[in-house]
Amino acid sequence: MDSDFFSDTDPKALQVFLDIHRNMPAARKVEMVFEMTEMVLAASRAGVRMLYPDANEREVFLRATARRLDRETMIRVYGWDPLDHD
Image (cartoon, rainbow, N blue to C red; front, top):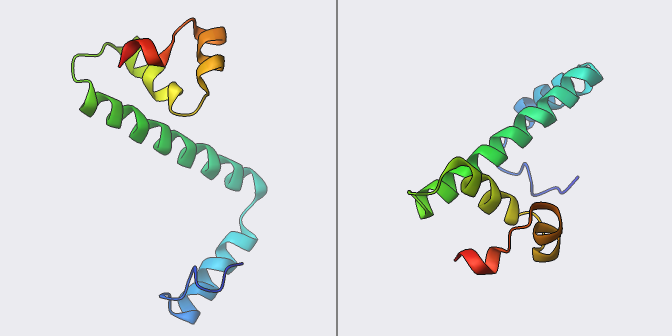
């Protein structure tokens, strides 16, 4: 683990945090990963909505997806070219 990552955290608090995560059931850890993933995707969609306030839900989905996939995949999978929609 990067030693600077928690450099601003009290060592006792860090130990409590690590103990909680060590003792957490695997299913809960996976659930938390899915929750965090959804939070990141929601933030991406919100960013698209800020840049394109008139975009419909399909366009928001495509633009947010284009932030994660390369152009060729977007065209092949969704039939949507991000370069044609700027």
